[in-house]
Amino acid sequence: MKKVQLITDGACLGNPGPGGWSAILRFEEQKKELWGCEKQTTNNRMELTAAIEGLRALREKCQVEVVTDSEYVLKGITTWIDGWKRKGWMTAAKKPVINQDLWKLLDEQVNRHQATWTWTKGHASHADNNRCDELATRAAREQSKS
Image (cartoon, rainbow, N blue to C red; front, side, top):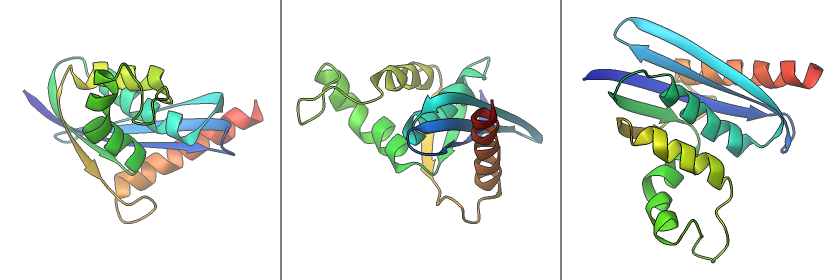
């Protein structure tokens, strides 16, 4: 099974506002950059979308280390999601999970792979995370111009 690293980031100009997401896939010496945007969204939705689209881009089952600077995504997928599913996608406060549509898509993509999750500090020393931030912000800015 291939070992892949997926680095993700999301950005939003205003929250909500125009948003962008990006993902970098690394396999051996290969690197692939992905990005996209939405007209009206939130930062959390873009963070989730980056992970979904990065995993979706993998054509076969892989061992994937997902690197994110989003504690929301990290805690959601590693800690909260099992409880949400058991409770019919309700929070501990008995309210519907926010961004449930994207959490379900992320769960589906994660289950296609053997995924581990790593948090990195944003805007710090992780070169690929900084590149993702640059791509996501650029995508959000381009979206805000159209």
